[in-house]
Length: 480
Image (tube, rainbow, N blue to C red):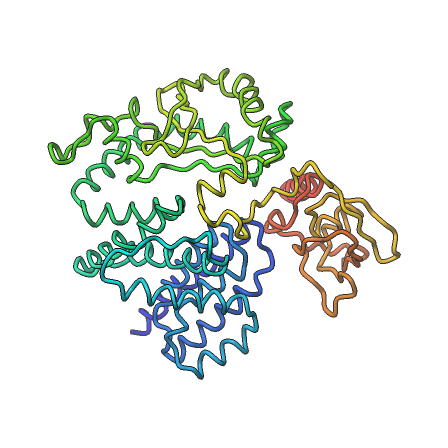
């Protein structure tokens, strides 16, 4: 019993660490709201009033992957507290002390009650007339249902949840264009409703991935070296329009529901045959989706700059554009790419506004983060900050306290411990993002040559100079 509890907590802590990592990967370094919400869950867990913490963490990870702010992620962690006693809720409110988080939770409670107590399909809610808080609550509800379907192993319960999802949640999500969560929810409903066909497509698709591992890896490497946020400056190429204006990049295997839709558009009929192999091959079905997102101001440059990238980088590697097509439901278009081994990829080029609208539907105006967006903005690329002697410095917009430390001197950066910003009462972390007009006093052990740099610092910096200095530091330490 004791060992089982340790194992369970170990899984829980891994999920929590994954949540923090996901939030940070989307540019959220201030995780105070998330940490407080998780502390609450642990307290409730000890009181045995929170028994499904792993589920709450998984839901929050889905929300974090969408790029929502820390208040929304915290609300996702605490979205079931409405079921607790008034005393517990009062304690949580006093501990969290954030009105936005609890407004989302209250809307979630109302929405959940409406959906779960409805036995017939309801007319989709007109979310354009709803507040952003209500819309955010619906996102959490969709994420909650996705996780329930993914992790409910009792067939009767799975069918019950799937049926309600088909009647209500899918209808709302489809009407409002919540493509990101819609595909995941439809995928789970497809798995439960047609397990034999789902498994057949899954087996064949994974077989294709294994058979073509090498060529897929080589193709992905080309894109990763140019667009991956972690390596954004690692490959110097003379393609400024696309290199420095792409604010988001994704390279993902397609969901099985997406493949199933395309199989049906090619003539596959599950009522006649349960074997999709005749249609499911790399010559018919693209295996991966690639998405490049541009700032709205760069809309006119998107296609032109990609064509330059194609001519200079992809075409010499025998990666060709072979068609321009629409998705199965005609809601979107893409360039069809084919590598030298005939594996195909769907490439979507989108502006930020179009990407948000097509992917998140009504949530386009919500607080969705693109990690490197500010770095590629054509307006106000620099801000002015002041050191402890009130000397002004022009630094890149999006810089962190650690970036400023490296700006002052490499050793100040390597030995930095934190910073006082605008006479803050305590030392703030190095990942704190700086704003125009900030007064910064870097706390560093450079005088004593005590180095504090760790590999995690790559997550704390946003400038090319800082990244290069860290690379040089760790290469030098490796050779000592």
